[in-house]
Image 1: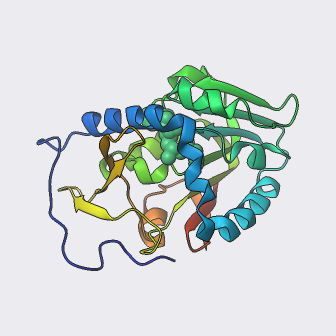
Image 2: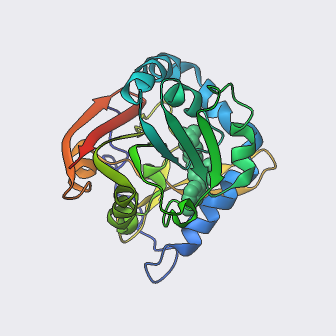
Length: 240
Ligand SMILES: C[S@@+](CC[C@H](N)C(=O)[O-])C[C@H]1O[C@@H](n2cnc3c(N)ncnc32)[C@H](O)[C@@H]1O
């Protein structure tokens, strides 16, 4: 696992909302990804991450084979073809049509994948459909700590008993990750990111320890498995 980004000098603690609210931080993150959509996948071309990525891509498909999978925050769909290749059904969702427009161009298994705009925090756009698996790539890290439990509850409410859940996300690796600039009063950490147009964006990005992530899963989670891929982590579990 990468070094903790909080292990070195204490970070300045700032509450960007002033009242501990998260809406402004979440809106800023969502619009940052709209602006970045056309070149977002450059992050998947970092040379030092290639070995981990190939291993994870190969690992993912069989874990979700034969399942009806809900993917939240699919973005440009880097993981969608890998996850969906043996799935029975795959509903890929994201708040932003702009990122999903890129995802729709991916080589996807015929008749399996559907895209639909949906807010991960409500999943209200999904009607009453339920699933026997869920997947989220590089989304957990953007969920404010104070919303994590409620978000997981909303996701789990869509999942049937016996469902398999796979989350993956970035580990903090000093030589590869964008530095953490500060933490807020709730313990969320932030990075300052620059887009191609020169604009700078403060983005909430958390790096949980395995213990922190597993502790957040709630009462239905069974048999959690944490896999350390060095630049990334994977957390897989079942629901009762
Ligand atoms: C870091 S990207 C992850 C994309 C992709 N899953 C991956 O692993 O490459 C985060 C994604 O979250 C989406 N997003 C932001 N707020 C969201 C929300 N409230 N509900 C669903 N998706 C959201 C953004 O549009 C963006 O595509």
